[in-house]
Image (tube, rainbow, N blue to C red; front, top):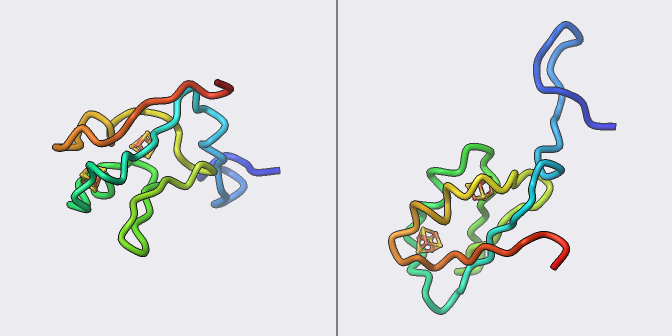
Length: 82
Ligand code: SF4
Ligand code: SF4
């Protein structure tokens, strides 16, 4: 089981993905790979590889900062479970 980040028991990992109610989805055709979403994500969940942006859903907590900060508005917002 994943546990809280830092406390009496030391440092461990928190599964912030379990907080998410919405998830970001990039429209790759509109993304310019500027990296701004990567810089703003508070849990470092944005990945850029092979010229495509993706999100690590283990840690993406669905805060929406990437969507708000994307200058191209290339990130859609999808409700979990839909
Ligand atoms: S929704 Fe929040 S946590 Fe998820 S990738 Fe975007 S900025 Fe990071
Ligand atoms: S901020 Fe928007 S345009 Fe820039 S890399 Fe992220 S998704 Fe692509």
